[in-house]
Amino acid sequence: DAGVIQSPRHEVTEMGQEVTLRCKPISGHDYLFWYRQTMMRGLELLIYFNNNVPIDDSGMPEDRFSAKMPNASFSTLKIQPSEPRDSAVYFCASSSRDRHNSPLHFGNGTRLTVT
Amino acid sequence: QKEVEQNSGPLSVPEGAIASLNCTYSDRGSQSFFWYRQYSGKSPELIMSIYSNGDKEDGRFTAQLNKASQYVSLLIRDSQPSDSATYLCAVRTGNQFYFGTGTSLTVIP
Image 1 (cartoon, each protein chain N blue to C red):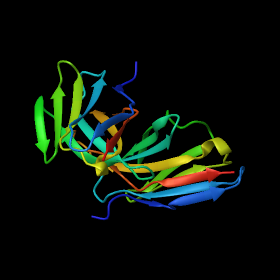
Image 2: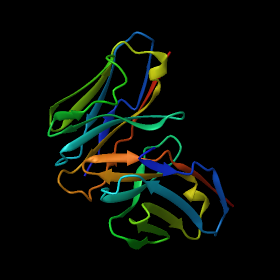
Image 3: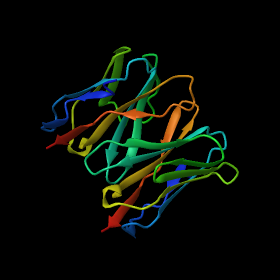
Image 4: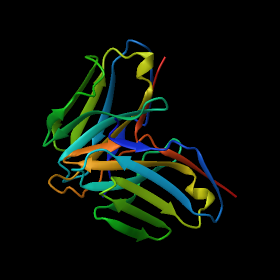
Protein backbone atom coordinates (compact mmCIF):
# COMPACT_ATOMS: atom_id res chain seq x y z
CA ASP A 1 0.00 0.00 0.00
CA ALA A 2 1.62 3.23 -1.19
CA GLY A 3 -0.39 5.41 1.14
CA VAL A 4 -1.83 8.79 0.23
CA ILE A 5 0.33 10.47 -2.38
CA GLN A 6 0.52 14.23 -2.73
CA SER A 7 2.36 16.41 -5.19
CA PRO A 8 4.24 18.62 -5.29
CA ARG A 9 6.00 18.40 -1.90
CA HIS A 10 6.95 22.06 -2.05
CA GLU A 11 5.54 24.90 -4.08
CA VAL A 12 6.84 28.45 -4.16
CA THR A 13 4.88 30.92 -6.22
CA GLU A 14 4.27 34.61 -6.56
CA MET A 15 1.13 36.35 -5.45
CA GLY A 16 -1.55 36.22 -8.13
CA GLN A 17 -0.40 32.96 -9.68
CA GLU A 18 -2.52 29.86 -9.90
CA VAL A 19 -1.55 26.92 -7.71
CA THR A 20 -2.73 23.34 -8.16
CA LEU A 21 -2.16 20.69 -5.52
CA ARG A 22 -2.70 17.03 -6.32
CA CYS A 23 -3.68 13.98 -4.32
CA LYS A 24 -4.05 10.26 -4.89
CA PRO A 25 -5.94 8.56 -2.03
CA ILE A 26 -5.40 5.04 -0.80
CA SER A 27 -7.04 2.57 -3.15
CA GLY A 28 -10.45 1.53 -1.86
CA HIS A 29 -10.93 4.56 0.35
CA ASP A 30 -14.16 6.37 -0.36
CA TYR A 31 -13.58 9.51 1.64
CA LEU A 32 -11.03 12.16 0.76
CA PHE A 33 -10.27 15.21 2.86
CA TRP A 34 -8.24 18.36 2.23
CA TYR A 35 -6.75 20.09 5.28
CA ARG A 36 -4.64 23.19 5.74
CA GLN A 37 -2.23 23.54 8.65
CA THR A 38 -0.65 26.71 10.00
CA MET A 39 0.99 27.51 13.30
CA MET A 40 -1.72 30.02 14.13
CA ARG A 41 -4.80 28.00 13.23
CA GLY A 42 -3.68 24.40 13.48
CA LEU A 43 -5.29 21.79 11.24
CA GLU A 44 -8.32 23.14 9.37
CA LEU A 45 -10.67 21.06 7.24
CA LEU A 46 -11.21 22.70 3.88
CA ILE A 47 -13.43 20.19 2.06
CA TYR A 48 -14.21 16.51 1.95
CA PHE A 49 -15.54 14.14 -0.70
CA ASN A 50 -17.49 10.91 -0.53
CA ASN A 51 -17.44 8.74 -3.63
CA ASN A 52 -15.98 11.67 -5.58
CA VAL A 53 -18.83 13.99 -4.58
CA PRO A 54 -18.08 17.08 -2.45
CA ILE A 55 -20.01 16.73 0.81
CA ASP A 56 -18.90 19.69 2.88
CA ASP A 57 -16.94 22.64 1.52
CA SER A 58 -17.79 25.05 4.32
CA GLY A 59 -14.13 25.23 5.28
CA MET A 60 -13.01 26.58 1.93
CA PRO A 61 -11.88 30.08 2.83
CA GLU A 62 -13.15 31.90 -0.24
CA ASP A 63 -13.97 31.62 -3.90
CA ARG A 64 -10.31 31.63 -4.79
CA PHE A 65 -10.21 28.03 -3.57
CA SER A 66 -11.74 25.17 -5.51
CA ALA A 67 -11.44 21.39 -5.31
CA LYS A 68 -12.35 18.59 -7.65
CA MET A 69 -12.35 14.83 -7.59
CA PRO A 70 -12.89 13.60 -11.15
CA ASN A 71 -12.42 9.95 -10.18
CA ALA A 72 -11.78 7.72 -7.18
CA SER A 73 -8.02 7.95 -7.49
CA PHE A 74 -7.37 11.64 -8.01
CA SER A 75 -8.23 14.99 -6.49
CA THR A 76 -7.00 18.54 -6.95
CA LEU A 77 -7.09 21.66 -4.84
CA LYS A 78 -6.68 24.85 -6.79
CA ILE A 79 -6.01 28.38 -5.57
CA GLN A 80 -6.50 31.16 -8.09
CA PRO A 81 -5.25 33.79 -7.57
CA SER A 82 -2.91 32.89 -4.73
CA GLU A 83 -2.13 35.31 -1.89
CA PRO A 84 0.65 35.36 0.73
CA ARG A 85 -1.86 34.44 3.46
CA ASP A 86 -2.44 31.13 1.66
CA SER A 87 1.06 30.04 2.69
CA ALA A 88 0.62 26.86 4.72
CA VAL A 89 1.02 23.11 4.57
CA TYR A 90 -1.84 21.45 2.74
CA PHE A 91 -2.62 17.84 3.60
CA CYS A 92 -4.75 15.37 1.75
CA ALA A 93 -6.12 12.43 3.72
CA SER A 94 -8.37 9.48 3.00
CA SER A 95 -10.51 7.04 4.94
CA SER A 96 -12.81 4.08 4.40
CA ARG A 97 -16.57 4.48 4.22
CA ASP A 98 -19.11 2.89 6.51
CA ARG A 99 -16.44 1.78 8.94
CA HIS A 100 -16.74 4.23 11.74
CA ASN A 101 -13.60 2.87 13.30
CA SER A 102 -11.48 3.62 10.27
CA PRO A 103 -8.85 6.30 10.91
CA LEU A 104 -7.68 9.06 8.64
CA HIS A 105 -4.52 8.43 6.64
CA PHE A 106 -2.51 11.51 5.70
CA GLY A 107 -0.29 12.22 2.74
CA ASN A 108 3.08 13.89 3.20
CA GLY A 109 1.63 17.31 2.51
CA THR A 110 2.43 20.16 0.17
CA ARG A 111 4.25 23.12 1.69
CA LEU A 112 3.01 26.19 -0.16
CA THR A 113 4.82 29.51 -0.02
CA VAL A 114 3.28 32.50 -1.75
CA THR A 115 5.56 35.52 -1.98
CA GLN B 1 -17.13 25.48 22.29
CA LYS B 2 -14.60 23.60 20.24
CA GLU B 3 -15.36 20.04 19.25
CA VAL B 4 -12.06 18.72 20.58
CA GLU B 5 -9.89 20.41 23.18
CA GLN B 6 -6.34 19.67 24.22
CA ASN B 7 -3.85 21.45 26.41
CA SER B 8 -1.43 23.04 23.98
CA GLY B 9 1.49 22.61 26.34
CA PRO B 10 4.35 22.64 25.93
CA LEU B 11 4.77 19.58 28.07
CA SER B 12 8.27 18.62 29.15
CA VAL B 13 9.19 15.35 30.82
CA PRO B 14 12.55 13.78 31.60
CA GLU B 15 13.66 10.73 29.69
CA GLY B 16 12.22 7.55 31.21
CA ALA B 17 9.22 9.30 32.78
CA ILE B 18 5.55 8.90 31.92
CA ALA B 19 4.05 11.56 29.66
CA SER B 20 0.32 12.11 30.02
CA LEU B 21 -1.67 13.82 27.28
CA ASN B 22 -5.33 14.70 27.65
CA CYS B 23 -8.23 15.47 25.36
CA THR B 24 -11.93 16.25 25.80
CA TYR B 25 -14.64 16.24 23.17
CA SER B 26 -18.10 17.74 22.99
CA ASP B 27 -20.23 15.35 20.89
CA ARG B 28 -21.56 12.35 22.82
CA GLY B 29 -22.31 10.66 19.51
CA SER B 30 -18.64 10.36 18.64
CA GLN B 31 -17.66 6.79 17.90
CA SER B 32 -13.93 6.58 17.33
CA PHE B 33 -10.94 8.23 18.88
CA PHE B 34 -7.41 8.53 17.59
CA TRP B 35 -4.03 9.85 18.61
CA TYR B 36 -1.66 11.13 15.95
CA ARG B 37 1.99 12.07 16.37
CA GLN B 38 3.40 14.84 14.22
CA TYR B 39 7.08 15.58 14.01
CA SER B 40 8.09 19.05 12.92
CA GLY B 41 7.78 19.37 9.16
CA LYS B 42 6.09 15.99 8.79
CA SER B 43 2.54 14.77 8.38
CA PRO B 44 0.40 13.40 11.23
CA GLU B 45 1.04 9.73 11.85
CA LEU B 46 -1.54 7.46 13.53
CA ILE B 47 -0.19 5.90 16.71
CA MET B 48 -3.27 4.76 18.62
CA SER B 49 -6.97 4.23 18.09
CA ILE B 50 -9.61 3.41 20.70
CA TYR B 51 -13.31 2.75 20.38
CA SER B 52 -14.51 1.32 23.70
CA ASN B 53 -14.36 2.57 27.26
CA GLY B 54 -11.26 1.52 29.12
CA ASP B 55 -7.61 1.16 28.30
CA LYS B 56 -5.83 0.00 25.19
CA GLU B 57 -2.14 -0.72 25.30
CA ASP B 58 0.36 -0.89 22.45
CA GLY B 59 3.97 -1.11 23.50
CA ARG B 60 4.87 1.98 25.49
CA PHE B 61 1.59 3.69 24.57
CA THR B 62 -1.70 3.39 26.44
CA ALA B 63 -4.87 5.10 25.29
CA GLN B 64 -7.70 5.59 27.77
CA LEU B 65 -11.31 6.39 26.91
CA ASN B 66 -14.12 7.48 29.20
CA LYS B 67 -17.23 8.20 27.15
CA ALA B 68 -19.29 9.26 30.16
CA SER B 69 -16.78 12.02 30.88
CA GLN B 70 -16.06 12.59 27.17
CA TYR B 71 -12.39 12.22 27.86
CA VAL B 72 -9.52 10.57 26.03
CA SER B 73 -5.95 10.34 27.17
CA LEU B 74 -2.62 9.01 25.96
CA LEU B 75 0.09 7.76 28.28
CA ILE B 76 3.62 7.28 27.04
CA ARG B 77 5.71 5.16 29.38
CA ASP B 78 9.50 5.25 29.47
CA SER B 79 9.50 8.43 27.38
CA GLN B 80 12.33 8.74 24.89
CA PRO B 81 13.77 11.84 23.21
CA SER B 82 12.39 10.43 19.95
CA ASP B 83 8.88 10.88 21.40
CA SER B 84 9.35 14.65 21.24
CA ALA B 85 6.64 15.80 18.85
CA THR B 86 3.18 17.32 18.73
CA TYR B 87 0.38 14.92 19.60
CA LEU B 88 -3.01 15.46 17.99
CA CYS B 89 -6.22 14.06 19.41
CA ALA B 90 -8.84 13.24 16.75
CA VAL B 91 -12.47 12.28 17.16
CA ARG B 92 -14.60 10.68 14.46
CA THR B 93 -18.31 11.57 14.47
CA GLY B 94 -20.10 9.99 11.55
CA ASN B 95 -17.79 10.63 8.64
CA GLN B 96 -16.29 13.80 10.05
CA PHE B 97 -12.97 13.98 11.87
CA TYR B 98 -12.39 16.69 14.43
CA PHE B 99 -8.90 17.53 15.62
CA GLY B 100 -7.57 19.23 18.69
CA THR B 101 -4.91 21.88 18.34
CA GLY B 102 -2.24 19.47 19.54
CA THR B 103 0.02 19.15 22.58
CA SER B 104 3.72 19.75 22.12
CA LEU B 105 5.80 17.21 24.04
CA THR B 106 9.52 17.51 24.73
CA VAL B 107 11.39 14.63 26.33
CA ILE B 108 14.55 15.89 27.98
CA PRO B 109 17.54 13.52 27.87
